[in-house]
Image (cartoon, rainbow, N blue to C red):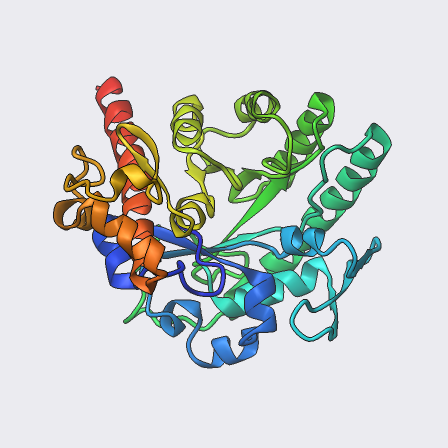
Length: 349
């Protein structure tokens, strides 16, 4: 899932994302709440219509962004008080408020409000964080079930991500809520988190609190511990990963959904992923290289432009550089997932 933090996958227009085969993108609740605000977006028809994106949308809970504001927040059992990184204004996020904001944005998939446990964290800290996350998960779910029907829908514009069943008030339920497994880097706490969330019966389950500085083998260990516990008939989502070989490995383990800013962030700094390995396009050796970026890739960038030209754009500081590099990296990532889906389908008969 390409990450569109502020309602845009940086430097890549929506029609290009569609042509690359992106079926769902992410929006960031914290950032969109601060600017332009969830109520203006609601009044304009929801995030789908506001950003002109008729395919799937997932919004995170805002928990990770609040977690990253270490010097600007105070966490209590009720919720999180924080200062805006934009203007210093003060705000209070509770599980209920996070759900209200996400309902107003109108995403297809909402995330329960959680506390992302930092790395490293000792056991006492991880236990306290898990206690908070589980309590907030229950509050998020209760509030979602009571209010998910309040979202305004513009069905003539939006293409539903998946057909939905009937909601708690016998109304069409067109939004889903996922719970987030936390527990730091402790296997037993991760198991406890998964088991408790399954009892609550969410629409899908995410594994969070990874890619926060831990070594890769520990990331894999936590995923391998939790994944078999999660229901196979519901989406299983690993948040915030990763490099191309990682996402393929996790997909083959049974992970259904992943997201990461890496493809576009790396692209803007000249790091490109190809069938021949990683390329730093700023390198002098590409100055007169007339070959395509990746001879095995059929994306619009590789079909038209040379390595020399892409390097020239980088060194010239041209805005087009970030756009073309991002388009290629996203095409590469989406191509990996397409091949994995094809391989799994072939194995199944």
